[in-house]
Image 1 (cartoon, rainbow, N blue to C red):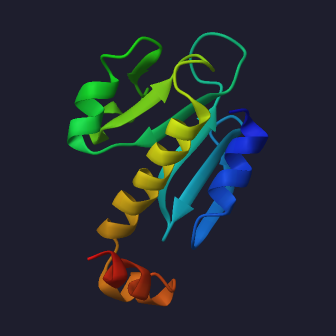
Image 2 (image 1 turned 30 degrees about the vertical axis):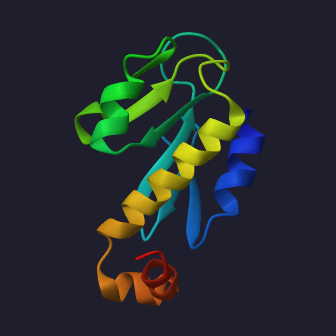
Length: 125
């Protein structure tokens, strides 16, 4: 998944916002909280995707070849894909959707309602 594909996918998720910060990184948020980043942090010139994980996913993914604890964000259970082939595009999409869901779940009920996410969360439960 390249940066344009990453941006297109994140833009299609509900109630997301996008900013460019931290040296040109593509930062995606829901309710003002970050759930995924595409950056050039670390070695190499290719874009690196980082996302928030569940505790279990964080433990498992950081053991995979080409996936590391995300710089500056590892203590919050984020991983970074160090190589474009570290994970399939379909799996990246699933993990980004999960990151969006995790961060949405951390928002207050009022914030979710204001973003139109309240009904969506209620249907999942």
